[in-house]
Length: 102
Image (cartoon, rainbow, N blue to C red; front, side):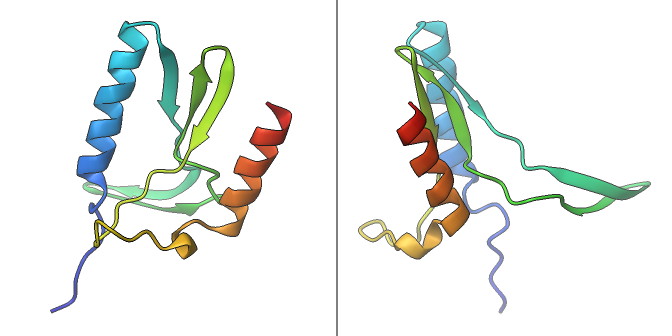
């Protein structure tokens, strides 16, 4: 049976969203989910077809104590292991650039 990974990270994303909402309410930080740039090609009755316009940088960005914060959220299958190949080169470059400019 083929395994679908389509919504594997949704529980993690909901937890991050809840945390970010709390940080905003308590005036600790403002952190937003970055949208993935998608170009819509066709819309039918119950389907939207499109493709990614460009590579996304990271999942979240914002401000904490006056400083920029950027991070990528990844769900893993093995709770004691995170393979660094899960973070793409363009994401590492983005994070390094942000760290140097901050």
